[in-house]
Length: 344
Ligand code: ATP
Image: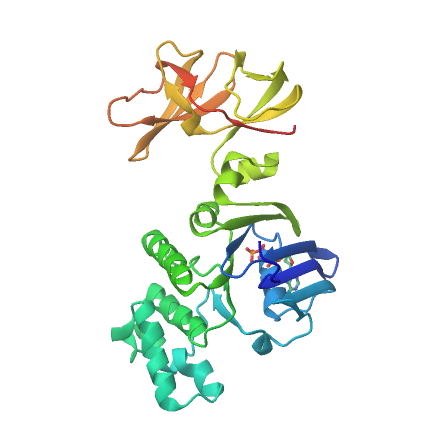
């Protein structure tokens, strides 16, 4: 790390609405060029935190700094940030080109320079042929591309995106998600992104900040968050998991009556095992024997629900091509990876 100040720093930020503590003391830094995502369930305070960073909402306490300079009281326009909202927020009576160029015109850029920049950013988000259309003549995905182009046109210091894909259908959502990340990479753009969709957060981010009740529960790179959740809450919120009561005995996790592989050293004692479906494989000699309760075909794999003799239910993702266990059949599984462990 260089000694440079982060692009955005939030320090002990607080905001209450009446008695509801929407943001309850959050400190967070976003480095230049970094893509950070705020992930959490509805009402956890992620939008409020983003609005505080943007300057749309004044915090009750704490500090906002941009490139090392205090910006806690700065107006949104003075922060040099670009915004993208779930609702697109385009001017309905302006064409795509006029929407994209609006901030440039307001900033007093010469007409020819603005027009060239509009075409440049429109090309980046693949909407050049649509520049003369009005918002009602564009699909949701196209409108969000216009909004994205509008946000990057003035070359902002960073982008703030509030659930930008939530209103789009799955296919467009996946495509635009990848394009947004490719675009910020290409431009070296810093981004703070809000979503409640854990899959989207894992796919798009350098770092994911999991929020719960106005606080940060865990922040980590996507793979670390998934493979090494710090708490039961994160383990259940991110990815699919069965939580099992476990005990470390002489350095080896014991759960469901068997010894499990262990990735990292851990002190003896009780804990919870975070068993993911892909950590099990079918094996006639496997130690986990049960009865198939459900088998859902998911295309790439079959998600099998197994009931063990002790009554515990576990899920396993098995290759769907050859193996088709049906409900009521006996099946044996064996662990093929070390599950994460979290405190009870
Ligand atoms: P969502 O995904 O539903 O938008 P969120 O995680 O973004 O949720 P916030 O919108 O930040 O959460 O809201 C956090 C809490 O603050 C909620 O309890 C919400 O009801 C409350 N809240 C947010 N904005 C206001 C407001 N302007 N007035 C009153 N309460 C508010």
